[in-house]
Amino acid sequence: MSNSEAIKGVQSIRNGLREDVNNLIEDFDRMASVRFVDFSRLWKERHLSWIFTYKLNIIDMREFIEDAYQIILDQLNRSAKPERAILILYLIYCFYMCQPITPKIPIKLNLSKFKAFRYLFQESRVNKHLDACYIWMKLLSLGAFHMVDQTKAYGPLAMKKDPTLGASSSSTNNFSLDRTCEIQTEMEKVKNLHYSYLALKDSLEGPDAENVKALALVRDEFFDQFANILEKSAEEESNLNNQEESSALVPY
Image (cartoon, rainbow, N blue to C red):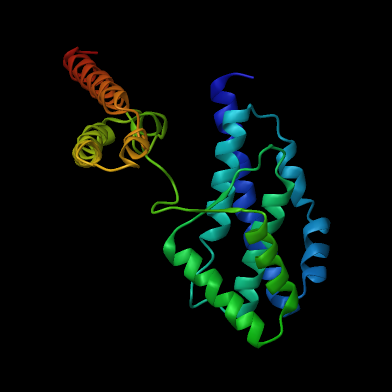
């Protein structure tokens, strides 16, 4: 399977998943149920676990699973009625448990989604929705969640690969460069903080000073390596822009 065929295939199953999720939500809403046994019957009838049988390499499979989480979590908000929120919890649980990757890909939650789930858990306790309480606690016990600021990370490599951020279209090229510069600025702040931390360690005195000085949160060469990646990425983007501008001047 060529790379373009794989991309088209992944896009098609993403679209199919989005449609399946919407249909399942409609069916579960009509049932007016909060029981996991009712949800599992719909899950089995729609063969949703079969979505993982599409032949993908490990990288594409990881990305698809994270996209699947996001498609499901997009349906969750504090204003959602309890039955809808509980359905989202059941869906995210089943996708987490059925994924064919070991170790399992964690579910990325930003603060607003975490608060929505926590509010759902509190309401479920009050209303005795024990199935929902159990599923939430099971996910927590499995370490299924990864708290993040952004549900999708955008570094230099991710921006190059993502068609909405990278150099796949001329309308987004400048955005990639701007984003790279923004990351570089933030990394400079982290770098300065790191060296301030090192200076503070060096100034310590006392019996435990040597043990503390031996601690290292970040390797010193990390920042230089990251700067090289950013510089190389920005150079490639700039060269690509120049090529596109040159080709635009060539008459057809």
